[in-house]
Image (cartoon, rainbow, N blue to C red; front, top):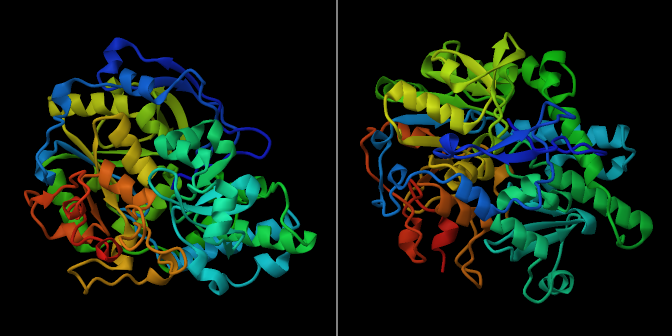
Length: 508
């Protein structure tokens, strides 16, 4: 788990970047310093104005031999020397109906009791508006609007509070082209809105941990409009919702048994955590037999150990050569924060790549040091690396855009919404992650324009393949050949979805 949060009165992170020396430019990065206000969670900070996306990519460039830009359109796990996995919602899958309900209830209770918002709105059962939930929605904080974006910042759909806006209303607010300057800039560089000045205007709900915040935010806006008898000129709701997320997810809560969320999971893990199948566990063992396998998670070591034990089993550490917790993605892939040793649950001394060892667990760190460690252990100057994860910003966009680590996207909506050519796939929590009112997470062919959502485009552009879960891969040999995404605009660009493309993208 790695939730990006910002304190109400000050940013969690204040980032200072300096160019990394030539020796480190081989694998890229910026040095930066974090000053932590709420050390448990990923924060937002203002990136120096002179640092541009192009300059970042220039500094982080690797030798051409590290990645051939004319790659074949075939993907094989066997082609990689090192394979890494995210934990939450990748290896460890949650019972999402129960988990999202818990998250909403804890958040709503906090907003009523600690922030004084209207219980009549917030404490309504989640089920009343369950179809309003969707991963990947974007907040326009100040207008009280919730948006679904296309790839270029185009507003595909939008609501004010929980009331969906008409096309005329969207165009009246954002212009006839339905583009908000902030959403356009966000789509051009997803990390600018993660850490930069845009983070004060826009926020995306990128995974199942913060997905319920959309309904809480929307219901508060509804209540304020009714109270005032009209729309407000300016909404200042988000700082309070953010405080509620911090209250739930700050990393000290697991150890202290506070905040409502972690304590509920600890009391009854079977209610919230799915057991990983034997097929996937055996698949990991098979990979480890011939590859270096690493676990890279945003969760603090105590929560990561808890979820890994309950999903992968008591011997979960044997599945990985090295484990990195509290990785603070996406910054892990763009910065140079040192790895920290662990004394039990306590972070201790910083450690360089030359002192990392197989069999250990570390905290924080950065990709460039991990890559140097992997190069040393494999004996290869440029080992070919792959990372498998669910969060399209943290796990797919960041490593693919800012390093030469390839990615596989694990998106549960692919199975829950339905795949072409596979009517047998069943997702037990489809009702909470599939939304009729927002439409497909991936977009749809039936609409004007190309119909793709921002997340559909990110998936195709930055991952090699996309799967609904790891079980669909586990019975296949590592040499199995998958069609990769092609970057073409015709239907061949859908071949990277496995075992089938989203039904919404094949509709006419």
